[in-house]
Image (cartoon, rainbow, N blue to C red):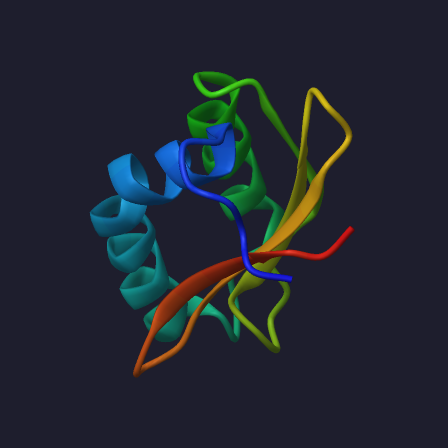
Length: 90
């Protein structure tokens, strides 16, 4: 399911797109030896401004994470070399 416009998730996506891309570039350089939970702390702080809660963080394998809004809608956001995207998953 595609995320709906004008939701906390869509606002987070629009405002933090550049920051997430910068975090992705850092992750590419350091993912083999840095603790992925360090990124979760940063994401959680950014999400708090939009009343979002991180539910599943970044791993060494993929730069994606899941979060939920106050209404209980679940989303997945990802960053690859070719795209930054997000979608509602539940």
